[in-house]
Length: 198
Image 1 (cartoon, rainbow, N blue to C red):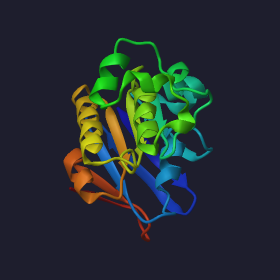
Image 2: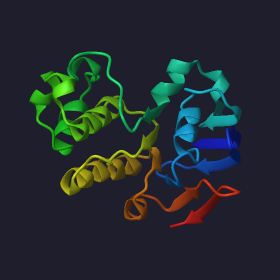
Image 3: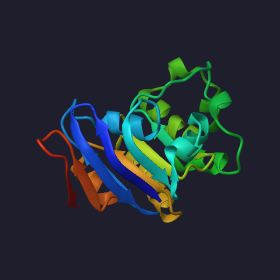
Image 4: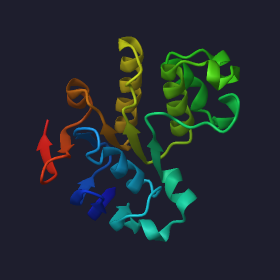
């Protein structure tokens, strides 16, 4: 599904790996090791050398917006361009049930974003990005601001996406979370990036 060949990030030796449908790769390493750079490069937000393929099609065969409908990046602190969340949420059949699964009240869609907690904004960003069904999900610390119950809800949503054949790349400092969601881990910040089984 997703193939990465000789992806060259600043300060990181070239990376190559494959992810099949339903695979989750955890990414770990200290701050500044290139975890977020990797996600941004894969989503074509930053220029990078190397080759990235989705279902056999090279990234350069897509324009940027088209690529990002298939490969969706979720930043640790999501950006918003409207006063409330509702204009950001795709009007799809998946959106309403997902609100409930995330433990959110529908009325939050119409509250000013500045009044929402960091955890509410994180979960609304997941709703925004997953409602239109991307193929590859790039998550940067998606539960960092959540309590245990909300974290469990988000992890259940990730597991459901994997069960539907999505690929997930998950940046997390939580080793237990990596074990719950992924079978492999990419460790950055050492002389050589390394992959290990979880």
